[in-house]
Image 1: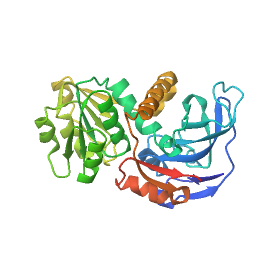
Image 2 (image 1 turned 180 degrees about the horizontal axis):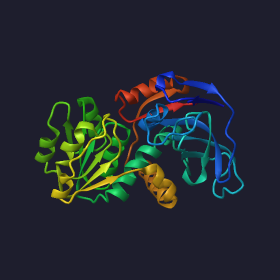
Image 3 (image 1 turned 45 degrees about the vertical axis):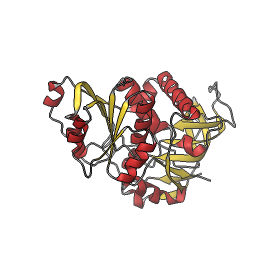
Length: 321
């Protein structure tokens, strides 16, 4: 099979696509001929050794993909060869074949492979964050930072679907226009406007969804209402912020971490229920996944560039065929 292979931690521009032996099938797993894979910011960090999980070498990066089952273990009860499926793996998705656990593999029906390949991580993360962790309620106000990126745009759509008033914050007018198209009620250009002042003008936030961190984290937290909930998603802005804990004390604020990948393994039933609800929202048109760009596997550096340089508006997709 062909895959991006990491033999050491270094810049993603220095990794290569290679022909390697396909992984062995394991109990409780299925083999999938990959059609498309979603690119996510943690994938880039992992290739460079900057992610909290550091797999042994050599490894194939990539956490989510979609394709067709070509083989399955004897103990897989509810899937079959020929099924069109989406799946999530810790590593291995940026390849023409992947072996994936059945517990995080689900049927697609007629959903396009590129849409399905970019669905799991961004919508899975955002739905888990808003539903299980934030316990977002209809009528509350949700502030989304980095709102035009993959997880941010998913949070905008899901927050709106859950009945919240959504404030989308992003760095350009073009990105904010995309947020408006996907349901945002209010827009803030935080490269030109003062984030804290604008959110307070809008009445403050009950929940903050923050995949950016860096310099925006503290001013955003200062806009939370009493019993507000701050969701720690990631640090795409670069620096991990140091938050003064008196901010949490003053208004009984909760700071809640969101580590979706580990949760899917600890609660596979909850994960399947969430994915079923997300799939239904896609089918009904309640949410409309946006693809920022398609790139062949051999052009993965360009795909990573789009994400790393924060040009992506929606999902970046690698295609295998």
